[in-house]
Length: 131
Image 1 (cartoon, one colour):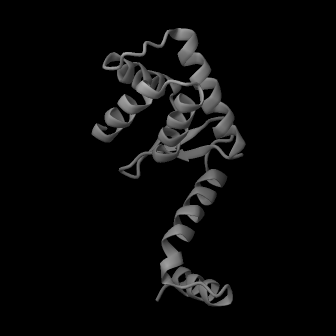
Image 2: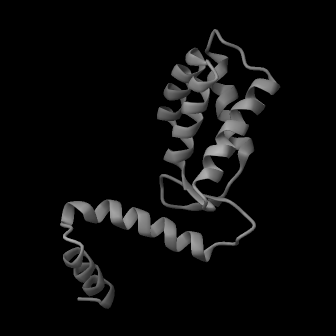
Image 3: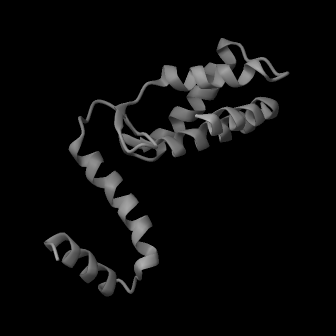
């Protein structure tokens, strides 16, 4: 058994946690370790594949625009800017520099709903499920 495994087992026992807690604990630990290791001046995304990429807001804007194409609700550039500001506030509120794509998608969905773009939200859900 590795030293890391021993440390994890001791931590679980000391904190009265069981194996069902391990998955969430490891996800949180992954974010914390990566956050400490990555360049402080940039933001990053952990893709579904596990790859790490530099955060690119243009990709998010593109996904929102694509979701509007099949919607009866049209968003102009200033509408998308509002959604992006809402997203940035949520990301900054996490006080870290690395995010899972699932977190970003969830925050975009919340921003769409908060701003009243329900039809775009429904199409956004369909669009990101294909992604």
